[in-house]
Image (cartoon, rainbow, N blue to C red; front, top):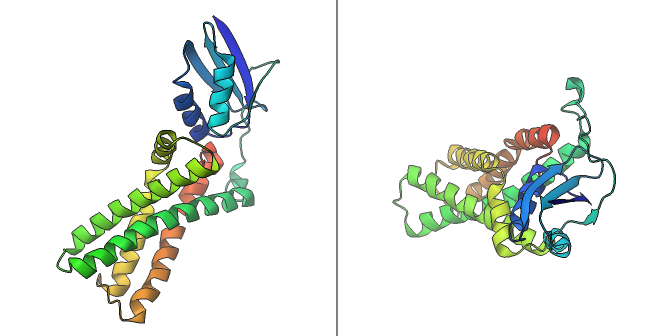
Length: 230
């Protein structure tokens, strides 16, 4: 059995999940491991008669760089962030805000689109079903938007882009959906009065609530586990 060690530009658990899926199509791979604590973000691949070109191509197609690495692949001790500084990483706050905004755009398209559709064509739909259908629509459009971004920006194929988007935090998206729908209901009473400016103004605080509620959670994941690939 031979082993190939590659230095990469991967950085998080979502990257690892993406590459595990991408490498499944490569023959003769027996074991795949990743060392994100190493400065070179190593991918360690073992098997018989490994297809080096195919492996490197899989990284390229998934949007990552990979080169063979010759050197110690031992585990570096993980850096522990002092508790007093945990919530003070401005870079990660900016990154978490950008990720949350992407999710908010995707959720809002489906969420408010469904509410407008139901009020226009099925006005007798109960409030409970309006919220359930709006949440489902919002989650669907968020995953669809993220899949499209990964397809265009990272050059993923559609199947890999969809699986990667689907693996992203549903806890964050569901929290966002609940915050938006609850805020909108509290202001409008659940009725879409398209001819009144108050209905359209209610979308602003609803979207602000949808942005703020999951933001600390997204920051926490990014800061503690470095989980983010938006």
